[in-house]
Length: 195
Ligand code: ITT
Image (cartoon, rainbow, N blue to C red; front, side, top):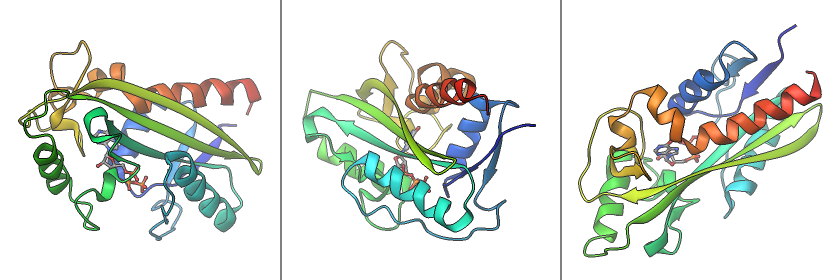
């Protein structure tokens, strides 16, 4: 029987990207599909702690196997910001465009554009927690390019790609993506568990 995991997220873009990588191997159920309507708290100052908070919250509620992920864009010249605050960088509205505007404003005149996306997945399997990480190095460009993807994708060019995440198809983004790298580790682990 196929292993079923609840994905503790309210971000539909993440669901699409992770389903794309996982394919038919495991059944991923969204919070919406599980009938859970909550804004999961993310009060901590690390991706790891927030990922844990999200998966434990849903595990306590459902007692089912589940996972969450927390992702941050870490910009070298901004001492790692927006980092764990990526979703709410420009305020509680979680507006992608406002976040990009604030990022480009804060980087005005700065030549060091090095940045990386980092994803931490927290899996709760049979009540035990496991963490998996993936990252993608790249640069923040000065003007938005492309309309695909979400979040900071229009201003991020992965190293060696030449185009932004927002100019890529799902397949192209997947070859570089922080999220894909973390998910591959998750899949590898699940396969070892024979679940
Ligand atoms: P959940 O907590 O419900 O999973 P969220 O959108 O709040 O969804 P995060 O706390 O992980 O997710 O916030 C990360 C933010 O970073 C997200 O809102 C985007 O703005 C940005 N982000 C995450 N992954 C990204 C990606 O692959 N490309 C571009 N931006 C991304």
